[in-house]
Amino acid sequence: MTTRLLLCVLAAGLGLAGCAPVQTKDNPPFDRDYISCASNKCDIEVTVNNCLAERGITVNIKALEVRGRNVKLQWTIVTQNYKFATDGIVIKDYDSKREFTDPTRESDKIYSWKYKASPDVKKVYEYGVYVERIDPSARCLPYDPWVRN
Image 1 (tube, rainbow, N blue to C red):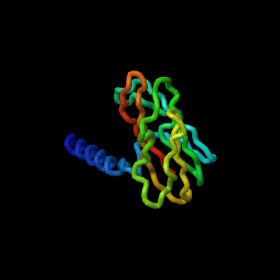
Image 2 (cartoon, rainbow, N blue to C red; image 1 turned 90 degrees about the vertical axis):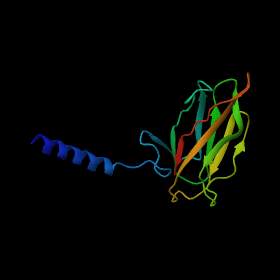
Image 3 (spheres, one colour; image 1 turned 30 degrees about the vertical axis):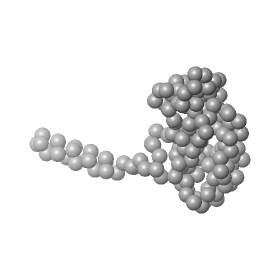
Image 4 (cartoon, rainbow, N blue to C red; image 1 turned 60 degrees about the vertical axis):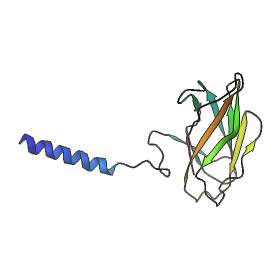
């Protein structure tokens, strides 16, 4: 009886595990709460807590869902003594349909992209935040949250 019960519990557990969603580039991490951006501009604040540590950079919006066309996504570094690296914000895996305009480096601390595709296009984007410490000079470890539309 105990063996049969153990086998039933094991089979049920394996069956439930098989139903769990899989994390892929089109299915971001399960622990992310999306904040929807439907206005013409979304502000994302970048904070540097420890430049050279894993997860040393944070953003106030960990996962962003864009709803609309011509939405400006603007990242601003709020921590003193840091600036965006040359590559600043990189939208990963966007395709040749050009869902975004080319990035704009508005200043050392402000970087933006404009989402221009139709909101009917459903895709999840991962983006990288690349920051440098000014004094003493150092390139920080990147931060890679998500954007979806």
